[in-house]
Length: 117
Image (cartoon, rainbow, N blue to C red; front, side):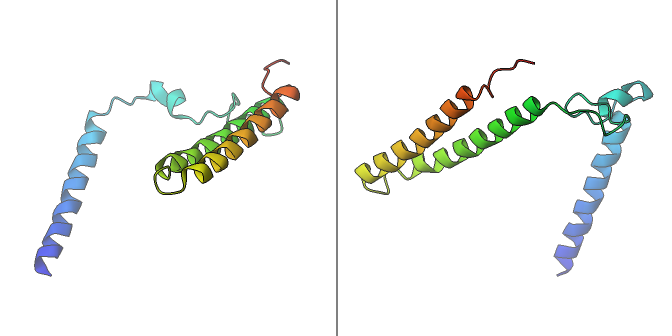
């Protein structure tokens, strides 16, 4: 128990020393304030929050998130290739890819992918 207390104290001391060295060696200055300020969607964070928002920008973001989640679902399918029946795996994978392609076709058909004003 005593050894654990010493190790915890040692970790706290080392982490504090590292943070202190980091603060001393960092090259932040008053001129870099703009780099540290939040920047989202091209809006100035200090301006009014009631500025009109581009709906197209929002749709592109939602499409990206949907396809990002779909890619995260495809990776486990690759790992399960050897665990299940080959024909079952092909059917499920084909069905999944067809749903993705139909969604992409629908977005293309609705002109959601083209960046025009």
